[in-house]
Length: 80
Image 1 (cartoon, one colour):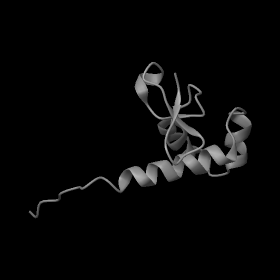
Image 2 (tube, rainbow, N blue to C red; image 1 turned 90 degrees about the horizontal axis):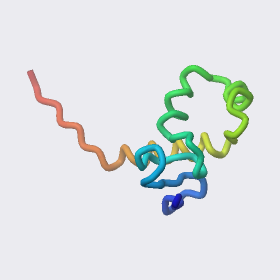
Image 3 (cartoon, rainbow, N blue to C red; image 1 turned 135 degrees about the vertical axis):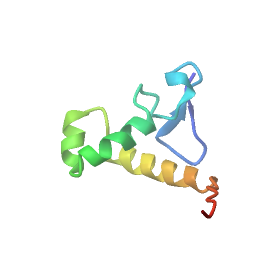
Image 4 (spheres, helix red, strand yellow; image 1 turned 45 degrees about the vertical axis):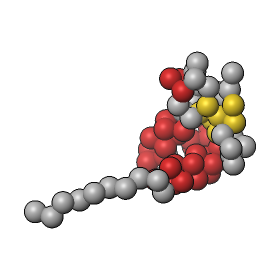
């Protein structure tokens, strides 16, 4: 069963779908896949044409979700 991620109206997670990855509105379209597509589609209108199930708000929320996920990461760099 798909559950919406707290604070997001378009991001859902279902352990039985897509290996529990965050998805767009319960579809088999992961947040990761949307983010991977963006460099190939600088014009979102073409992306929305090629993926008619996707909505502009889905893209915005996927970006917000990804940005928030980065807040928790610490990357340690060692000086040479």
